[in-house]
Image (cartoon, rainbow, N blue to C red):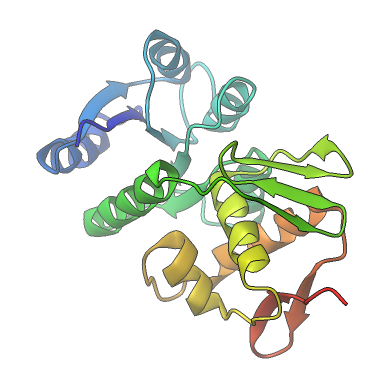
Length: 222
C-alpha cells in the first residue's frame, strides 16, 4: 500500500488508538504531538493524508489546516471533540476534506481514510468538462470559473465532477455519501449539506439545484 499518513494529535492515547490500526492496515504512519511539530513533519516529507486534531498546543488545528492549504491539497481529516455546526463549518471553510467528532469508531476512521485515498489516487480521465462559466480538468484536478481558479477541497471537486458527468440526474444525500465519500454512514447528511453550501459559495455560479425532498442536481444546459 505504502500510503503515508500524518497524525497530528496531542493526546498520546488517541495517537496510539489511531496509529496502530492504521499501521496494521498497511499505512506508513507518522505522529506529531502539537501544531508546530505537525507543520515541521509536513515539510519534512510528502504525505498522502493528514488526520488533524483541532485543539492542539502551540498552533491550533484550524491554523495548521490553513497553513498546509497554502502549500498543498493533501487530503485533511479534522478530528475533534467540537461537534457544533459552527465548528464544522469553520473546518470546511479552512478547506478540510472531512470532519470526525470524538468519541469515534476506529472502523469509521479506517473507512474514511480508505475512501479518501481511493478517491485521490484514482486515475483521472484526460477530458475537460464545461458547464456555464465552469471548466473542470480531471487530469490537473483543477476547476476554473470564468478563467479564475476555484480552491476546492477533494470532496468538493469530486461532488462537482459527479454532477457534471451526470447532468440532469438528481442525487440524494445517501447517493452522494456512497458515490463520493465512498461509505454509507447514517446521520452524516449534514456533512453533505455543508459541502454543497461551500461548493455553491466558491463557484459563485447558479448551477447546483436543490430538488426539495429529494436531493441535488446540475440541470442539463439548453
